[in-house]
Length: 309
Image (cartoon, rainbow, N blue to C red; front, side, top):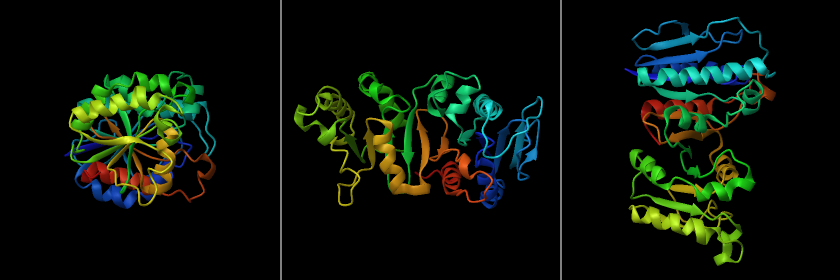
């Protein structure tokens, strides 16, 4: 029996609506999986999950609710309370992962409201997972057609070059090798500068940082193309690439989300279990309106249970 932990994210977001709309798949999966929703003590909930202080050792849909005073929240209105509950749910899910040998689905939260709630060092799920499990982690956005790894994640654009200079390439190669990603597949490495630097005419980062990284990956048996001009790598008719390395967050995620739409998910490389998350945010503006699309959550559940991507 496999266990899947779900951290609730921000309860004032669209997350509970997404769970409701995922109910048919969740019930089907619960016949062979133990699925646990880790939630705070508040008034927003779903009837899909059975309350269980000590989760039964059998398949089913269960929820573990934090103790303490019940918080009254309102959909679409994030607060210090919702930010705190979101982080605490994630923290407890991480604590439960190892003894249960579980996989993890993290529903969206707001970094802004988590920080406002007092967790000022929080940078994101991926970074917190690295800290908690003492492992180098890497964000891989994956969909039916594209896979993209942003080599720097939630850092200001002005810090990208310094972050790239200290990127842990050995750990990244090990993370790739421990995943199902084959060396026979082709990696495309995007240049940092316009037109991939034009041989040093528009910046030297391709020469000083990216070319040595390509040489390292190639020496470890990976097929790498690059540096590639980022403005054309995703165009129809461009050479087929199995994985794209982007130098910074938006360079890779903007085209990925445009092309994959709601079918994309966030998959964490570098852990000894599978962690996934929808590739969208909290969508507070539509919370409670009944129009949230569960496609990304459904894709996350498929990856955890079917092992594809």
